[in-house]
Image (cartoon, rainbow, N blue to C red; front, side, top):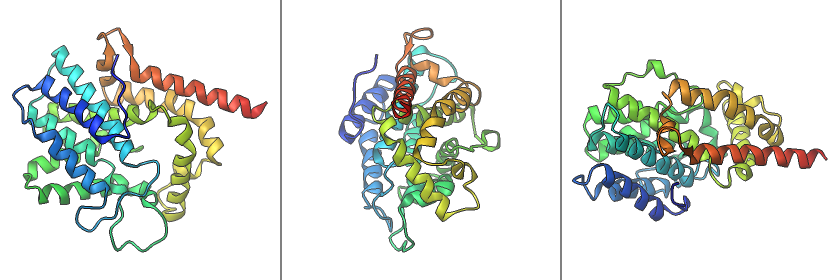
Length: 286
């Protein structure tokens, strides 16, 4: 199974991602992973342009690192199996940029004077992340074609992502985008503290509903943190699992060890978290 990595430690996650990258591409750019991690750390720490440090408590930098670690592992496992289309180093690199920037839409501008954290942008955060990626990557000298590819990958995230509308330039770009969407879901739901952070997620939803009532119908359905927790096992069973299998082409199965019929560490961790939720709810009901 995968080694334990502290996802609240950017250095540890960076080392694991670097190992995956060099396993896939031994002749790749040995400085690329460290370079783009540095960009992401600067962005989330408020050291890029006119943006504040991240203050969303659920969609924080660790959330991004959880998805980043999962995506690197998934793409590495897929590469080792040797299925087509094989990815180039450049396509992996663009995917890494995409996952590191996919939640920058929660960052507030320096002059943002309206009350609340970046969670108030929950309903529009994917669009804002796409805009942020264009700003950052233009600043870093990326071509317009590469920026569009990263933006397409970011569009694969979000509760209401309409994948059929994304104008992928190639099958490989689609694979990376679907891997990004897969890792965004698996990384957070498999986290050791996922159950404990559900009330924090509800607080973000409640803040989003106060800020933007026109686009948050799915948020206002929750009656409170306990209600969100009660609905989470069904969310995993009825929404996430079908999305992973149908929309994201079962890419998560490349994480099975050994492939194709071995155990899936991420799915097992999520199932364990669903069990913990049921235990907590049962304890409250007694």
